[in-house]
Length: 258
Length: 382
Image (tube, rainbow over all chains, first blue to last red; front, side, top):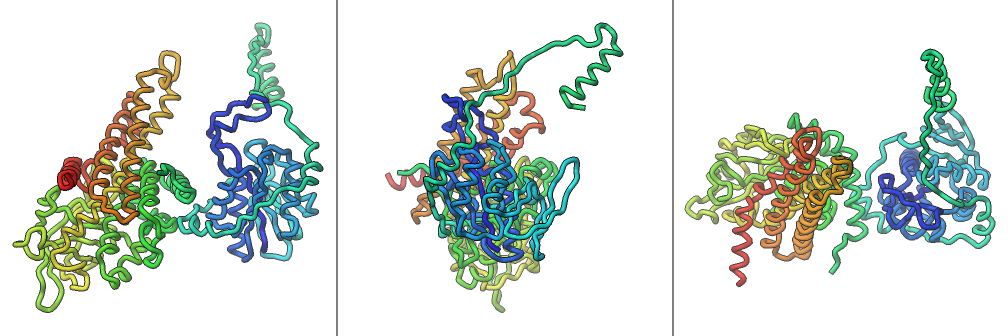
């Protein structure tokens, strides 16, 4: 079974965020970077599937040279080889563009399974995997928490809302987006770290066609911190009972906390 | 000159940090309170490669150098010094004694399972009457007509005395020769006449197991003698040259953990309407703490680097150990001060770092002994 795992590098969760001068993104000079959390679980799931069924795990990441640290970390944890789609601007393209570029890069690999985290911790669109599945003409499932690849068809368990789950089956090749926290992620061992030095990292650049065809679908025009406003309302007009009823109504319909 | 870790060394640092924060941090308080030695953690440390980090792969190790080794010990100790000192004592005392001076047979039989983490190592030099004066060894080993040695005596303050599978200890084989009459032997758990005794109830590093061991007519085969008769003391001194670098790493890790807790607290704690980190009194403390930790870390890395180059590190490892351990005590005390009243409680981490740090100025040679070692080297070369 050949599994491709798509992994993204994102800013550290604990970083103090400042908006850049163009107001288009956060100031990256301040940031340290780490692997997108749910992508780490996608890798772990891929490694477990390989242990059960054999095959190969190929990691694919896009962005500037700094994303090599995500790739090397994945190789140290046990991935077999990697594809790095290199480009300084690739960290900030929209989901359709990302999916187009990723589809081009993994074209020819003919994977049985493509796994990725359910969404990125920075933009949080949760679209790249889904669009990529469409471009590859693969069936897909999102928010997957369990994968059973022992039968002819793939069976996956999806997380729904309010504690509900759904088992779903599909043919392969397929694409799954993986939920965070579904397993205990293995650590990179010292031997794994040294062995990773010898593993292949194939560096590719997107074609002009992939870049131009994908660029126009979405762009960020401005980002800003949420504006804080204060408003005072008097409820009930002196009648405590009516005030309480109005308060309950507002908490239910406006604040949506009850 | 290069003052940065290379890519793999940085990966090792981050991997050990992730492990320590995931597997150790959630239990630190409980282990400290109950003096629980976390044997359940040992297979995980072995899986990571830390139980044989400095030994070649042919002996079951990870084939790393001292730079990687101290990096790992620092990261473990940043979260829990007890785990740091366990890994350090296992690697650079017991296992390293066999690696440096043992025969090929001894390496195959004892070092291999130690480096693989299947066995836990202990090392016995200190006795009730032989602390800083290691030459005052009273334990005796008398050669027997039928072969082997009959060992009697005891060793104090031995890390892994109870759970250790393999123990390297020295005994006097010829009292008339003083230091030159001391010989090292390998003992196995379960050997008749070899048993652990009183477990110490310690101020700090309470999750690290420290107890005495007793030899009572323990017959140890001659095949377990390390090197020649009379070489044990010199072997031990060379083992300590390496071991001290790891105590420097233990100290740097404890100091780093204490500093980080103080830094975090200073940004969160508000007095007079603003975070206390905005007051110069606190800023000066933080600046001094960070600077001293940095200096200690550089001394640690220099000693580790020289050791990896195969150079003699007696002076450099003593300097690193002396400075780092004293910094560790100072920094963790300042961390308590920054926390104010809360720092004096077990609700915040600095009090434990402070208790843990104090061992660093005592174990594997007190600060006073380090100064003697350094001075001896200075005067010898002047």
